[in-house]
Each structure stands twice: as C-alpha cells, then as structure tokens.
Image 1: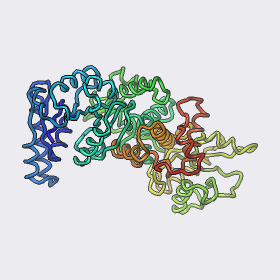
Image 2: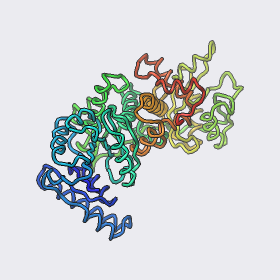
Image 3: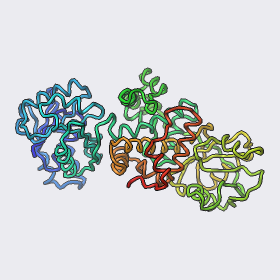
Length: 500
C-alpha cells in the first residue's frame, strides 16, 4: 500500500518510520519548507543506527530508507491507498486539510487522523464520504510504543475500521478498537493518575518527590505523576485535562488542578523550561523523597484480620514475619497498635470503628507486590503514640521496606490512584468506549502501567475497590468519587470477572 503522511513533526516522522520499516512505500509532506526532507534524513539515520545495533539487517535498513520519499504538494497523494494526518490539534486546520485531500485522493483511499482529543465526527463533515475517516491514534514515540487506538465515530464505516486494524497489526502494533469519545481510552482512563496525585499535593499529604517515589516503588509505575507531567510539559498536560473536563461538560472526575495551573502560570513547565515540580539542568540536585528515620526492630506486631481472610494483608504479614518478627493476628492485646492494609478509610476512622475503646491504628498503603516492595506509605491514628509508631515503622524497616508517613487521608497514595484508575476504566467499559480487555491492553501498552486497571482491580478484589471508592466518596462528599455502574454491578453479582 502507498501510505502518505501529512505532518513531519515527531509524530508524523515516527509513523513514517513505522510504515517504511513494515514494507510500505511512504510519502511524507509538510507545509514547512524542507521539513519533510529533514525528517526523512533523520529517519534514515535511525535505520542505520538500528542496523549497527543488530536490530535490523543492513539490507532491511537500506530497503526501508529507499521506501521513503518527500512530497512537494498534497497533489502528490493522488495514488495513495492511505493518508494519515499528524498536524496541529486544531479542528479548523484538520477539516481544511481533509477537505483538500478529498478532492485529490481516490474514492477508495482510506483517511486517518492521529488526533488525540478532537471529534472525529466534526472532522469527517469536511468529506464527501465521511464514512472513510478513521482515528489512528499512535503514541509517542511511535516506533517504540506498541499501542494504536483505532477509533470510529457514528459515521465511520466498519470496513474502514477493519482495514486500519489489520494494517496496524501488519505494522507490528497492538491495535485496540475504540468508540469516539473525548480522550478515547488512554487520555481518559489515565486522568486519575495525574488528578489524584495533584489532589494529594493540594491537601498537603506529602511532597512531589515522595509522592513520585511511592508510585514507582510501591505501585510499580515507571514514573511518578510529578516527574511524568514535568516530562510531558505541565502546559500540555494541563491543556489536555482542561479539554477532557470541558468535553465531559464539567464532570468533576476530570476537574483540573489549581496546583498544576499555578505551575503553568509561573512558567514552570517542566523539563523544557528547566523547572516544573523539580529543577532541571547540570546544577540541579536530584529530588530527594522523605523517608522515616531508622527505628528499633520490635519482637512482635499486631496485624488486622484472621489469616486467609485477605490476600493483601496476608502478603504484608508474611513479609514482616520473614524478618523474624512475631506477627500476631486474631486475638490481640488491647494495648496493641494495629497495622492494617487500607480499605479506603482514614486511620482515625479505623480507630474509632473499634467502639468505646479506640484501637490505635496504622494504615498501610497498597503495594503491587508486598513481597518485593521497597517503599510503603503509612498513616497514623491520633491515639498511636511515638512508641507504638516506632514499633510499626521498625517492623517494616526490618523487613527491608523504607517507610513514608503521610497525612491521614483516605486510601493514601497508591490505593487511591489505582482505585480511581480502575473506576475510570470500568466507566469506559460501561459507556461502550471499549471492552475490558481492550481498556487494560491500552493502559499497559499506551502508558506502560504494570497491570491493566481492571486486571489490577480483580487482583486486589473488586469488593475492596468498591469499598475504597465508597470511603473516598463518604469522606469528601464529592461526585468525583462516584462508583461506576459497571463496577457496582460486578460487585453485586459476585462474579468478579471483569474480562467476561
């Protein structure tokens, strides 16, 4: 197939590289003089580098380079079988472009837009045959990221979607079929990863470096929300959040953050400006997360719940027990400080739930794997004195876990984030954006999450995720934390099979 691409920026040139490497003849066009030629030169150098590293044969690299050419005008696209648009995110610009292409390409030529946020139906109205416009949303850098969201609007022909999906598979990508709604899968479902971290910062729960360290070391995410938005650009991430918020008519689940807005207003945009949440440059010191100082190793510790009643608690108890500490479950002494894995309630709420004799409580955050976790957040109830706190912290430290003390807010950091990601993923399924398997695949392949949000919820237990969300909703009294009907129905049914 002859593939033509409009836009020689990072995304357009990345798509050109993918297509040429897959055996397609590629024609690249850009309105900026010399931009297409410069992009092709860079792609050819990348092919040479891949060959030198043994990731391509020299013959394949040379052949791929020969399949690349620059167009001098849109009229050069007359014989294209597919045209992919990767220009600025501006509806008027895209509509004008497709209107021009409509008069040039053949009737059976497929048209694809790489838009990440604009309405496909609105773009398609520029075409005489709007059914041939498909969303083909790549992720940056396109040659490395496997995911492609194949997006269809109400006017898109199923045959066009099928063709683009087959093509993406042939290019070595992992396509997921998506219904055209604001943010598609990834830019919608990922919003809580930023939003809940920013909410914790706004509530003074911790600092940016510590928050990032917890999401990495306990949650297993590649980057924390602060360093990730610094990399993306605070202005870019904030603009996407605002776009999604307005597209959903002000749904509080997508509400932008005043913390991020202030960074943007100050010009602290992240890596590209030299400062965001963190400073950048040769003289900038690396961020240092807070950590609890060393405490003595206790002989014993009390952990909530009977053995076998909760897999998360059992895993944490096993980790502490392996350090040579006597782990007491039920029964326990009235004087014990109780350690428990968060169910969404604050440590104070857990303490008061004991009745007339409050039970001093320390609540532990979620970890992807308690057997290997390197850092864990804890929150402490008011009746937990310094000695009791030192005992709990010392037990975790003896087990090789760095301890971080957070302000006593519901669901701490990792559990809050994962629960909200799972809830948004469940809502995407509920509203038919994509099926559960596609949502999980998109989040693993598109943003490198350690588990798909629904897969993670299943591992934790949907009933626990439901309880966490209910606790968040009760604490804040905000519609932001409403529970997805899909998740609620799964819990009520007792089936817990989100991928069925």
